[in-house]
Length: 256
Image 1 (cartoon, rainbow, N blue to C red):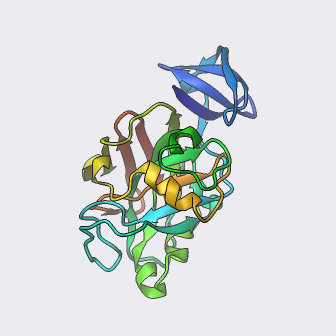
Image 2 (cartoon, rainbow, N blue to C red):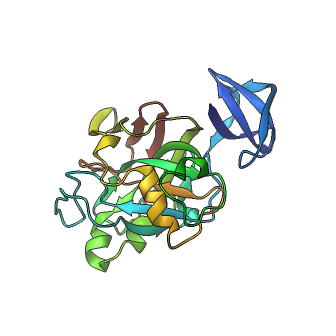
Image 3 (cartoon, rainbow, N blue to C red):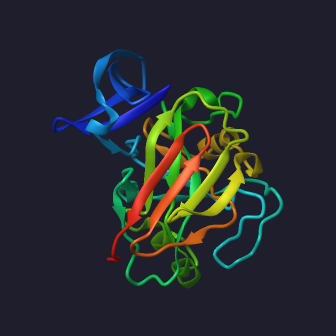
C-alpha cells in the first residue's frame, strides 16, 4: 500500500494512492484505518513529506565502501551504529526548492532509505521491529561537508533548513533487504547501490536506537547513504530513486 500526505482544498490530508487516484482514509495512519472513497487525482494535489516527526535520527556511514567527510572509507561493520539527530525543521516536501547555506563551499546530496515509525517504540528487538514501522520512503540528506571538517560535528552540516527532503509517499509493505538505491543530478547518475550493502539493516537500526531512546509515531529514521555522495549547486535538479518506492525530486535554489 502507498500512503500519501497531501495538501488539497486548503487542508492537509492523508490518503492511499492507487495508480494516480487518491482515496480517503478514516481513522489514523498511526493506528487502525480504512480506505474510503476516491477523493482526487494525484496531479490535483500538492504532495507533502509523508511524516510528521518530533525527531529524526540518522545513521552515519552505514554502507560498505561509504566514506566520511574526511574521505576515509569504511569496510567493516562496527559494534554498533553511530547516530546523530536531524532537526524536524529540516524536513522538505517533494518538489520543493531547497537551499544550501551560503557559507558552505562543499554542498552534497545523499540518497537514503527512510523509515517512518508507526507507534511508540522503546527496547524493540530486531525480530519485532517490523511491527513498529508505518512505511518506507526516499530521503535526500543534503550536507555541507566542509562544516563537518570545520566543526568536528554534524550540527551545522546536517541541520540547516530544507536539508531533509522526504517523499514522495510511504510504501507500507516492502522488503528492504536488497533494493536498488540511486541518486541523480540533472539526470546524471551519481550514486548506484543496493540496500544489501548496509552494515546494519533497518530492523537492527531500530533495535539499537530504541535501546536508549523512545521513538514516537511519525518520527523518521534515516538509514545512511551509499558511497558516491555528489556535489550539487544552485539550478540543479536532484533526485533520489529507490526500487519499490519511487523518485523524490527537488530543485536547488540560491543559497541563503
